Image 1 (cartoon, one colour):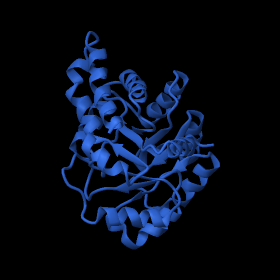
Image 2 (cartoon, rainbow, N blue to C red):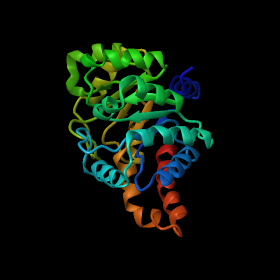
Image 3 (spheres, helix red, strand yellow):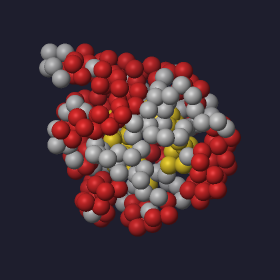
Image 4 (spheres, helix red, strand yellow):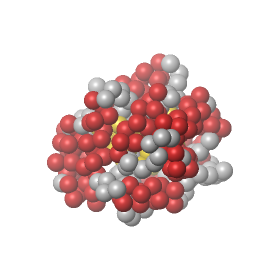
Length: 269
């Protein structure tokens, strides 16, 4: 069974909501990313999005853009991120890995090669925000062959497309909580609960919500109505704030503990 399916099934039995942190891999270094993945799992994270740094991230706000710039300055590529997943698994990490990438890096590698490498490195799911559902048949078919979920994004503006998107979904449905790019928000789209109900009625898959969720209070707000909550920019910002600690070998552990503490607060919520 795909690790994503097994994780959501296990959490459902416990009546527990999945915490899904996002991090930009390679910010500030690949080795530090490995250590933080381990720390996040120890803090209670259930799945993790591994963000591939990209120079033109259409869906990402300024916090994640800056993280991508820092990782790209280190020369981090999509192949590095895939290899890091395999390394983390060998070093004892159990939670499912979801690769978050834009489509161009996938095309550069080649679809078959990309999915073969993803499978070999035990990546369970893919999120590709700039690949429309109407154009994903080739990648979806290959992903199915390798037992990797191509996870769809659905937004409140999707309206009539919700049922189509949800019907082609795999793994879980990623519900976008607010319009625009990623980033921390105080308010969410109007009619959000109705939108979530529509998605639930359109698919038997678990639903997770993300884009803008940034505090334990907001995690608590959505944990009763969703199967999973994704937190990205707030974690990446916490990493950014800890960079002086993370980039100094003498204080690196302190920096990781600082970020881990925030993830633990989110999970406890």
